[in-house]
Image 1: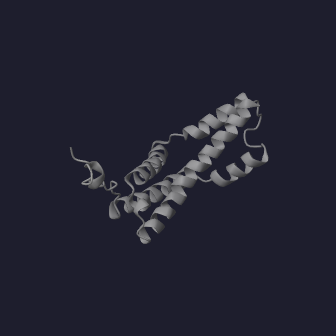
Image 2 (image 1 turned 120 degrees about the vertical axis):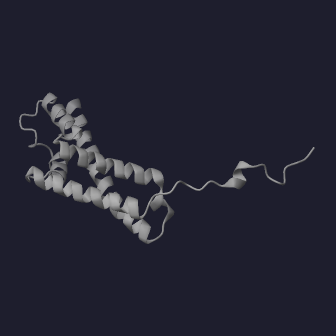
Image 3 (image 1 turned 45 degrees about the vertical axis):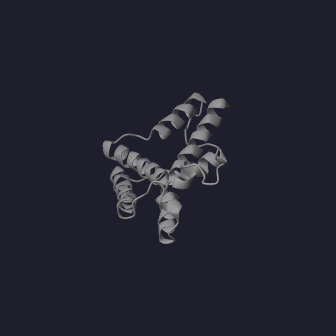
Length: 145
């Protein structure tokens, strides 16, 4: 039972990773259009570009996603005979994130999406948060001896 729960948790983590990459780009583009400061946050943008970069690199190298490998391993340990004939949540998460397409289709899709993320990174670069110089110095109203 513990392996099955762990495998379901990996599926949810995998779906969350995908959602952050896909919806993150949508949110960033909307945030940039609305001139929101968070849309240029260096940490958000850096993590976002790194996450899609990992996916693109894995696809180009022909590496199976480690989350997929982990999930399948956990399902085997749980005694699942057929890895993808399972419960409701797992079934629909798999329907949402796994497609039956040739490898070149995934490489192309990941690469194009990665280029879109990279384009927002280059044309609308992230910025370091501004430092407030007044908070670093002593206040002028400090008591003098």
